[in-house]
Length: 237
Image 1 (cartoon, rainbow, N blue to C red):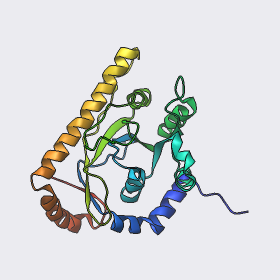
Image 2: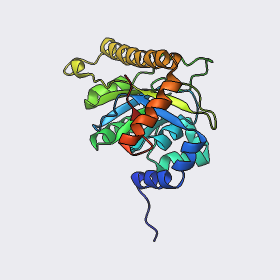
Image 3: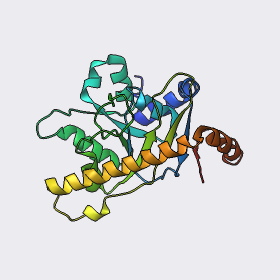
C-alpha cells in the first residue's frame, strides 16, 4: 500500500518539482526585516486568488494556510491546498467555525507557522489599500501567544513581471495577556493589527516610490554573494 504523504512532505515535493517554475513565471524580491524562526502568524494583504500559491512558491519555510470554505468548490485547487495542510474556514458560520479554530490553534501549538489574510477575501476595490479586517486573527495570536509577522504584497502578480514583498516588523499581543477578552478588547486588538498592516504597507509604498525597484536589484546582487542562495530577504538601509 502506497504511503500517504504528510503536508510537509507534499510541500517539499512541490518546492522541488514545481517551485522553480513558479519562481521563474512570477519572480519576486522579499525585502525588509529578517523572517523569525519562531512559530508565528503571517498576515498579508490579499490581492489575488493565487496569493497562497505565490507565498508557498517563494518562501522556504513550511506554513499552513487559512482558506475560505468556498475554495472547496474548486476540485484541483481544493485538493492541492488540502495536501499542503490548508485549513478551510466557514466565515458565515454562526458562532464561528470551531473546527477551523481548533485546527489553527493546534497548528501553532505544534510549531507550525500559519498564514492568514485578515481582510477575509480578495481586495476588489481596484486599489491596494488595506481593507477592514475580519475578527479572529488577533484573537488567535492572543490565545496562543504567537508573534505576528506582516508581509505586504506590492502589486498584483503578472507573469514574467517581478513583484515585491515587504517583510514588516514582528509584534505580539502580550499586553492582552490576562485581560478579559470582551468585544471592546477584541476591537482594540483588531485595530492594532490593522494599524500594523497599514504601517508596513505605507513603508513599502514609500520605499518603492523612491526608485525602490532599482535599489533592490542592486542590493540583491550585492547580498547574493554573501547569502549564496537565490531566495532570501534583502536587507535595506
